[in-house]
Image (tube, rainbow, N blue to C red; front, side, top):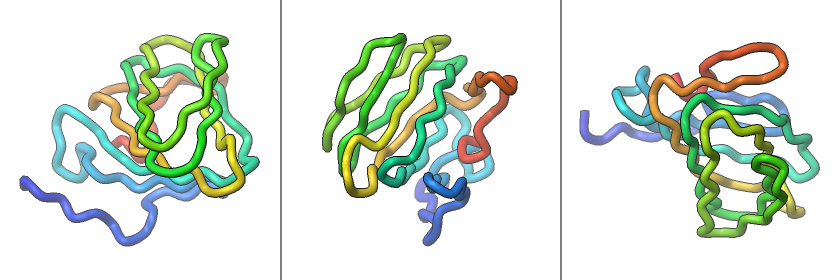
Length: 123
């Protein structure tokens, strides 16, 4: 399955953010999960950690990023590299929808105050 057709609509919608699974174990990948995320302006960030390194690429918009307590801004074309087991958050830093491409190794899990889980858009 070398080409996996993108879904026409987001696969997961949590109100202020929409996730579209592109390459995930349930869609045929075995090593890397890839998805698109669209985050609305003023959407609250959810601080969390990941058990594996995650990489985000800003496709459009501006992200306000906190990684290990260090604040940064990321713009179109910038990559955000989040080390494993490091508290981080990403929020929309602009007035239009923030679009990013996200990559996480298969098996990577999110760690929040509520527990550890595999994000549904990465399954």
